[in-house]
Image 1 (cartoon, rainbow, N blue to C red):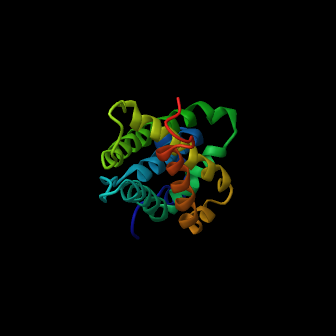
Image 2 (image 1 turned 120 degrees about the vertical axis):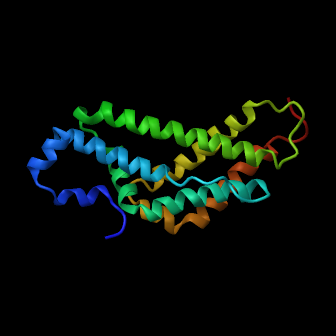
Image 3 (image 1 turned 135 degrees about the vertical axis):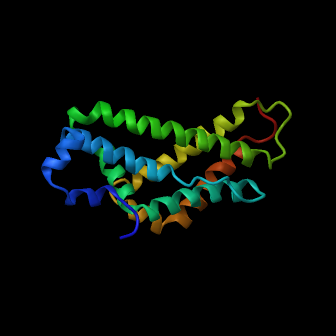
Length: 181
């Protein structure tokens, strides 16, 4: 039987479903919450000794969760595109809580990665948050590109990492000649 997924709950009677959840909407929110919970599970500290080793180990761990919990990943992907107004508020609340936790994890990972770099003395504590925002913006480019075909993202992960490295190198090493102002 293996692990328990929300998809396995479809084999129960309607009466039992409504007894425990009250409505299909509440069942939908329960499944979405459980799927998001699975995609947050088993988070490990980033591994590696270099900036990119740390970042990509964190990314690989997230990808492993998506591969291991493929049904949940597909469900969350579909839910993120759901436009029904009756579920919008509850869906946004759940996804917002998930996004906040992922953001906190990402900032922690970025802070760890940045400690491996010889940062300028005037680098503030906001540096990790700025890099995280930038990295998330780059990652969102790929999430949007592969939103309708998330499996293609996993097939192209080497290319995605290489492009992400190029974008991050721009931020790390700048695009201006000399010191600039």
